[in-house]
Image (cartoon, rainbow, N blue to C red; front, side, top):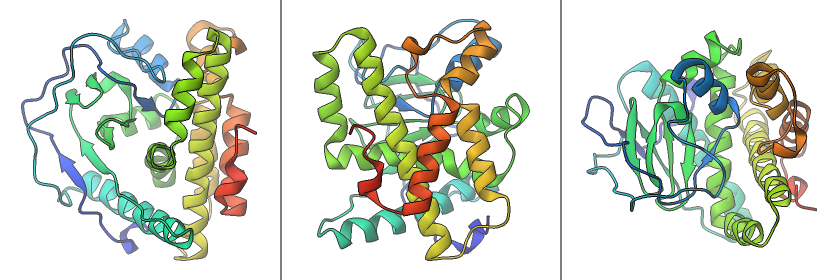
Length: 283
């Protein structure tokens, strides 16, 4: 991906090297890239430091970190995140404008090990996630190394897909989808609540595909193999892929993010159409 040709976002907050929290309970719900969190916990932590289920959270009231100045980090990893975020801003600003609406840009917080958020405290084992309460995407860049070394998912576009997926949750938040899904989950059985959660995650994958469509058609940023990198990443965070790796078998009723095939399917749909209307996973 020609990511250096994109515009850097000025909405990145870099908490690395600063004392942060992360030891308390969650106060709101968080949306993560997928069940890969479970595998990271199982293989590296040995216990659930943070349960990243959609619309969950309990414990003490959340305490946000002391604010840092937003801008573009100077290191390559931070710059990559800033460039990708900036390109998602350009994509969604145009889509919202074409629909007669204003896109409210999210902030993205880079942290190391642990951080306090508007949704409660989180550790690096949570993986990347979006907090609707403070409208921020959170990521520890060490996740990208784990994606490469432990899940054989290579390439910068695989990393870009992860960021675009989390931004997709922000779009859902602005459209009111998260609030509606949360309300529906509160009235549903466990199995039905999981099914709603899967639809939320698959739509975020589709929205990530819309960004990829825009990056290619409007700005010619994609290179050969980039879409395959995103599809490989989508498969790597499929519930069935993770469950097979962690527990040796698949329990479809416990899916919370969708199978590898579903995640690839909906990313492809967003990428091929570039249309928000094509991403109705709730239909």
